[in-house]
Length: 256
Image 1 (spheres, rainbow, N blue to C red):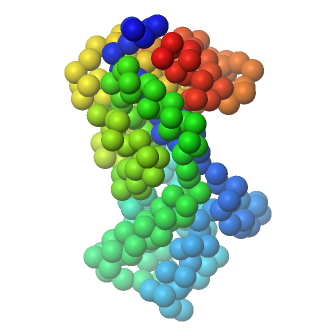
Image 2 (cartoon, rainbow, N blue to C red):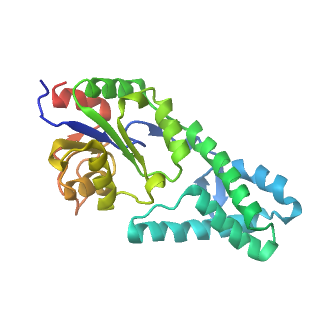
């Protein structure tokens, strides 16, 4: 019997089950700062489609301003704005100056840029074998769910498939699919409804203190924080029920 009588374990995806390694992305100067970004991957597509109307520096300016705006909207209401919608907004603003296409053409290009960008994200994301094995051990004793803040449903589910353990999760929510982001309480409730469980029956596991500890605690779940070696939970965040350095430690902690 499991040491802790939960009926389900719900995992975060990025930096919980899979490793996201942005340091493997190209390095680029943006507004005087060196950043790792997929932008160099999308530039050839923009050049191909827009020809001499593609001015890289101006596109980057529009892109960074729009991303900052969208991030503020997400934080204000804990909503999700998809990657495709982000590119569409960028292209609409770029179009206002450079007249790069009609609404249908811009939406099609936004979808194409999304796939290029997400291919770059997927290429630097992978699941360590030890974490996949931890999921297999957990799945032998608990029902499994997955709840991820990610702005593209297709890539999020592809990344999960790449882990080799996607078939063990009976309930999966990618924020792009529902228009909500953790720590919005409605997204946790959707997970509970999918599992047909009370919050007290669920252990939520993840690495981000607000989204994966505070949010689930407010929803009534128990939590396990993946600290990645941090000394303590940040100020203002309630204490999780468990702290582990990595997902691979969780089965032993739960006695499975």
